[in-house]
Amino acid sequence: MIYGWRSSTIDIDLKADPEPESFFTILQDLKRKLKINVDLASPDMFLPALPRWKERCVWIAGHRNINFYHFDFYSQAFAKISRGHPRDLIDVNGMLESGLIKRSQLWELFQECIPNIIRYPAIEQDILTQTMERFCFSDE
Image 1 (cartoon, rainbow, N blue to C red):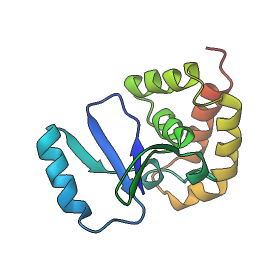
Image 2 (tube, rainbow, N blue to C red):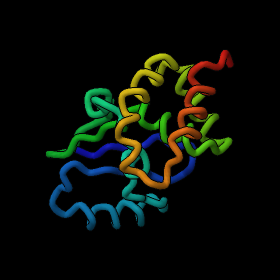
Image 3 (cartoon, rainbow, N blue to C red):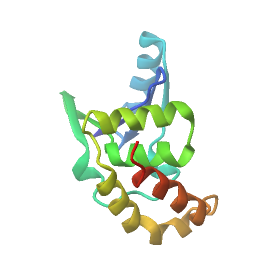
């Protein structure tokens, strides 16, 4: 399965699970044909994975024996909020407005992943918790 990470930039972030045969050859062809950047990246590389993220991935399409999915929108929102870049916050607000995520469910999922934050030494748990609280409990 190929999971795509929604981004407002003009690149594609992918996670293959498992990596299909010829995966890297196909990626090189894709990059050349579409003239875009393709990264092997997903939110769970930088933050603890939110519980049950695979269950929330949305199917996009299938081609031969490969299925393509949107990476869990809650995981995407979590990653974007934690980075805090203005463009990321615009993306997350778009997810809210289109009904892809709900603040209350994002907070609940975040609470469940807190015990795993210790596995990511670059993350300051108090700062991340404050950032998530501000977003999840704001009225914007």
